[in-house]
Length: 250
Ligand SMILES: C[S@@+](CC[C@H](N)C(=O)[O-])C[C@H]1O[C@@H](n2cnc3c(N)ncnc32)[C@H](O)[C@@H]1O
Image (cartoon, rainbow, N blue to C red; front, side):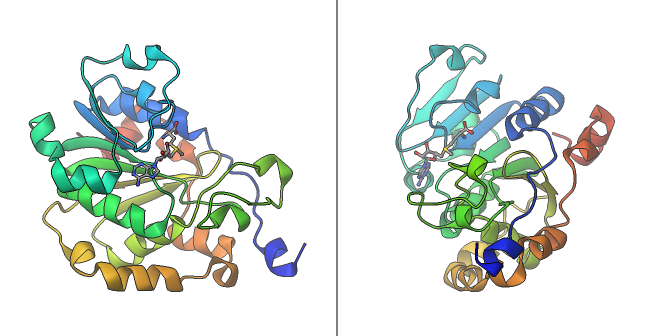
């Protein structure tokens, strides 16, 4: 293994599984609505018991039971950009998005657009959870999903892409956001609130933001330093309903 790859391998995250954490958010926050970008088989959509919008250009549902837990599920077999160009989630729900989960295309510029489009349709106290922003080794951060050879063989298939860059951009350029980076297994969950639906800063400066993100080099900064800057915490920091609802209130 090359020295730079060796320096850039950290242990598996010690926190609970991201789906268990999402289920906990649904259970404790009891959102009235939920928007999800990136659904595939519906494993995370199944966790929602409220009116939901799911967006994915290629749904791969195999189990009809994932629709049984909620009264309304709106399915948009579109890219998220196509969805936001022609639909208004607020109008569909009749109110701002309350809880969102972003898990679509794993490239930083796609997540940046998903974030600001979701924020614009949210309320300040809405909660946006973002998957895969805490990679544990470099190969999984490739912008291409295929052909990845993991350093640790048990991590085969853990493709995060480079959405870590978007998380770092939000941390650096949007200090007004409340960002909690959690060591959810396997590749982290970032929870963002204190949103500013009226903010056009990221959208207006989109090209500059993309240039900035692409200038971030994880091999150079090291994963450990990136985690330190993101102030990654163990998922147990939200392990009681009091701790959770003190920070997040819908
Ligand atoms: C990792 S999977 C989602 C898994 C699901 N959230 C879960 O945890 O069970 C990512 C999904 O993003 C979808 N996707 C890819 N490009 C997208 C885009 N531009 N907009 C929305 N979804 C996209 C893919 O089709 C794929 O189903």
